[in-house]
Length: 604
Image (cartoon, rainbow, N blue to C red; front, side):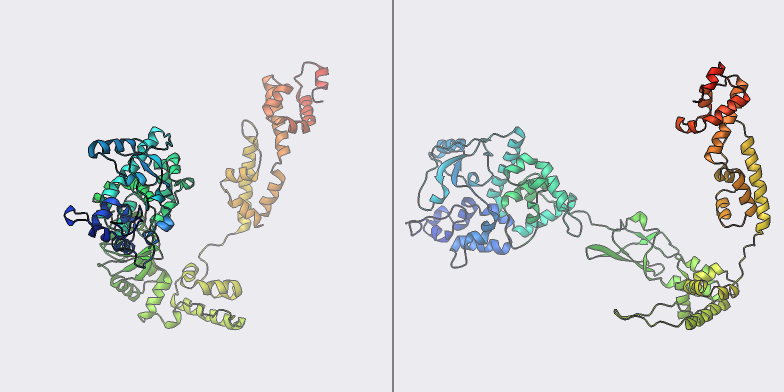
C-alpha cells in the first residue's frame, strides 16, 4: 500500500506507472523510473526489436501508466509473439548461494525468468523451476530462497555450449539493450550483414530459403527443436524477423539469427560493420563503346553509368563521350559479355551519322554501308531518307495498327500484285548491279511475296543467277563411271568382303552426301539404274562372305564347319538361314570334313 497505493503489485515483465513509485522513494538513492526500466524489467531485451513508434509508447506507459491507451502487452507486441509460456519462477542454486554469502539474502534474476534459458551463463549450471506461480507475484511476496522442483534436462556437450552462448547473448542484451537503438537501427545492421554474407541481393531481396537452411546447418536440428525453430530445416520464422513492419517479433529468434550472422549479440551491435561493396550488375567500370566507327570501338572508355531498378531488374544507359553513341542494357550482364551480342541503341551518335553521310554520298551500296556501320540495311535506308538521299517511297514498310476486335480489310490480289511489282522495279532501278541475295536484304518482304505469289514474273524481272548451269546428262555419265570404278574396287579389295552400299560408294567416289540428294532429284537415271543392280542386300553380302571364306580356308587347308563360322562372323540364328548355301559351297569347292558321313550331317 505504501509503494503502490493498493494491495496489488505490478507485472513482472512490463510494470507500469514507475514514476509514481520513484516519487515515493528518497531522491538521494537515485532509484528513478529510467533506472528501474533499465535494470529491473525486460524492456532492454525488447528495445532493439521494437519499432520506434511503439517503443516510445511502451516507455511512456511504463513511466506514467496506461491512461486509456490500451494494454501495454499488446502495444509491446507480447500479445502475438507468445514470448513466454513459463508458469513458475526459476533460479540458479549457485547464484542463490553467492547472493547469500555477499548480501545476506538472494534476489530473483531477470535472465532466469526468460524462456529458452536452460543454463546459467555465470556458473554453467541448470536453471531450476520452483513451485511459485508467476501469476501470484502481483499479490504475494516470495523471497528468492526456496526448494526447487527439479526438472532435469540432459544435453550433449555440443548443445550445452550453444545454450550457454544463447544465455550470454540474452544477458548482454538485458544489460546493454537500453543503450541501443530501436528496430530501425537493428534492421540496418541486418541489411549490411545479409548482403556481406550473400543472403540478400543488392535490391533488398532476401534469399530466405538459402538463409534458413544455413541457420539450420549452423545450429543443428536438436538445438533448434528446443526453441521450436527448426521448421523442416528452412527456419521459416526468419521471414517474419526481417519484415520491417509495425510489429514486434520474439527476441528469442532475433538472438538466434544475430549469433549466426555476427558471432554474438555484443559483436552484432558494437562492431563497426563494413558497408558491403557496391553492387555492380554490369561489372567494374569503365565499360566498352559499341560504335563500330568510333576510335575507341570495343575499348573501355565509358566511365560512369546510372543504374536504376525497374521491376526488380537493373537497367542502365551507356554514353560514349568520344562518339556520342547511347545504348541501354537490362538485367545482369557480366563485363566479358559486353563486347559482343545485341544492344538496345538509343542514339548512334554524331560520329556514326557523319560516317553514314559520307558513305551514302560516295554511292556506297546499302549492303556494304550496313556492314561498315554494323547495322541492318533497313536502318541505312531509314536514315538515308531522313538525309534526303533516298526517296520517301523507299521507307521500310510496317503493318498498320489494327485495333483489337477488328479484322483488317483484305486487299484484292490484283492490287497487291501491282503494288509489289512496282516496288520491285523501283528497287532494281536504284541498285542496278545488285544480285538477288543483295536485293533480298534490301526488301525481304517484297522478295518473298513475289517469289511465292508471282513466281514467273519475278523470275523474268529479276537479275539473272550468276551460278553456271549444270548439264545433268554429262554429270550422269561422269557419276556412272565413278560409281562403276568404286564398286569394282570394293569387290576387288583384299581381305574380308565389304558390303556394297550407297554410303560406301559415295565415300569411295568422294561425292559424299550429294549423291543421295542428286539421286532423289531424278537427274541421274543411268547412275540410279546401275546402283539398283549392284547395291547389295544384307543376305547377298553374307553369301559373298561365305564364298570368300570357303576359298580362303581351302587355300590354307583349314576348311571345316567350325573355321567357316568363325571366318564369316555371322550370328548363329542368321547363319542357319544360309546353311544350305554354305553346304553347297563347301561341297562344290571341296569339303574339309573327315568323312562322308560327317559331311552328310554337317548342316542339319
